[in-house]
Length: 249
Image 1 (cartoon, rainbow, N blue to C red):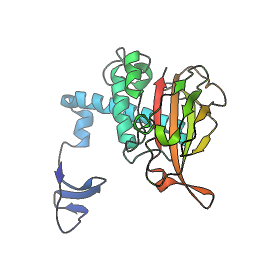
Image 2: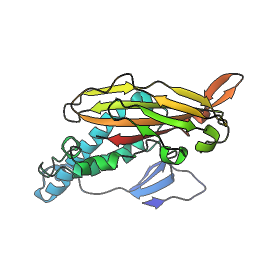
Image 3: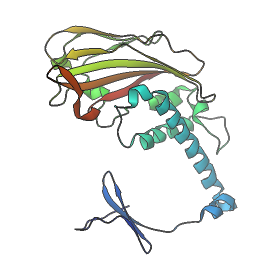
Image 4: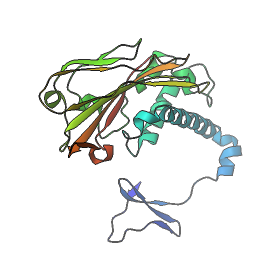
């Protein structure tokens, strides 16, 4: 895909050339390609139709997951989350070894260890990873969904952004059935602490174990705040907040 460089920032279509803006700058491409009607009917595009169908199923599964955790992900995501998660869901779909081509899906693929693997460690904000921000080990109780850290010292065990005065921890225990689309999301208490040299124990306990017959997702969130006149404000609207799927069972 071509990158457009000019004194003039153009968006729109000129003849067969389309100019458009992305997060990475201005781009240019030519119009053309096979018509949608031919792709839908021509036997030569059978594989294309199958690929498109599976891509749509993966995108739908990613959307289902995002909506299931909206209370956590709302201020801990990047602008390309939807496309990144669709790519991961496509990998999960590939683990479906029983459905016919064109109908392979996440609901079947995620049943296997190979299908769960792409989602483990997935960060919803590519600009801030829990694995990079948190310089301390933590324990996960997969029965209750509880996450805990002992002897945690914020200014030693965090890679925190400039201007941050406080850090906030929370976690979520989600049970999500991609087939029935039934979900149960249980949020933990929130632990807020000043970023200083005081050691503390962090214990995050979901209100209840997530119920259901789907897959269990365990999520860990770290958010940063700046205190001004005894009021804490989200640091740069949550740009540095991190949210990760730490385990899938």
